Image (cartoon, rainbow, N blue to C red):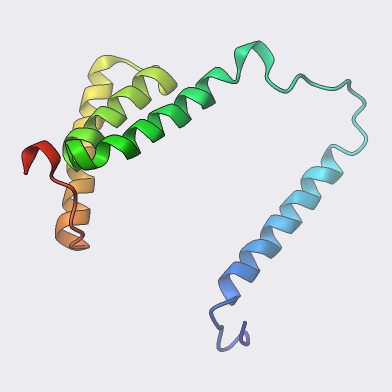
Length: 121
């Protein structure tokens, strides 16, 4: 872990763990005396959106190789914002185009990561 003047590789994980422990203890203390009945685990079909989110991520992972980064990421963002976020179509298309372009630029030019070309390659 090192010293405070020369932190080692375990310093950051240790610090983050310490912060998580303190925040967890604060949350436990805040809710310690509240008298309420057990809340339902998935109220009002609340399980549906997380399940759809996992499905969209799995579909993205399976289609990334055959369809390529640009097309798959664009479709992923469209479906995510349409199904999970439920925002307007104009916003969905603008954000999807912008984020896909920015991610492609960052990964291919700055980080020089080879991205799957798929249909475009």
